[in-house]
Image 1 (cartoon, one colour):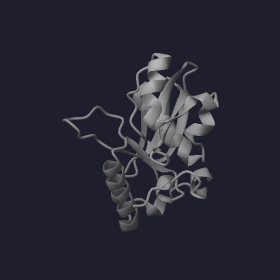
Image 2 (cartoon, helix red, strand yellow):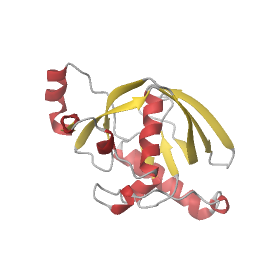
Image 3 (cartoon, rainbow, N blue to C red):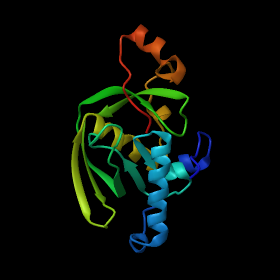
Image 4 (cartoon, rainbow, N blue to C red):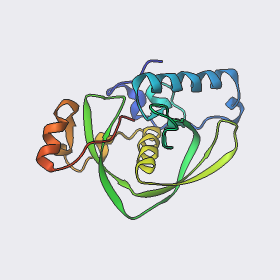
Length: 180
């Protein structure tokens, strides 16, 4: 699947809910399979449907530790809703598959709760904190047409990816955030 890049209007639109009748359909399964393949080929940890030109409230996220070297389980979030957010936030560098040449320092809630439908259409609720919470918030933002660039506290917190080593050395930080 083609990955929408910064400037594509679909990235700034509020996505529509996935209709209940779409769940389990061959076209929906095909969309999920294509998104998983796109995510894996890009080496990312998250991908929202708008990033593949589908304006629906759906995203994939690798929120679980890898089971074996290099293999990450992909969780499917259909019509997600953030139901809780901690007051505590922490900044972290984030990449995005829709503008891989940039890294953005983004403050995110440390803990969240998210309700969603899984691939079988069952309602799920997850309590997440730290890095998994960051991934879900990043992908959830895509569903509302919000990009990491919008969350930066300053333009000084938007850096060309190839310059991250220099920036981190100057700021005394460590970059361990893959692209979502």
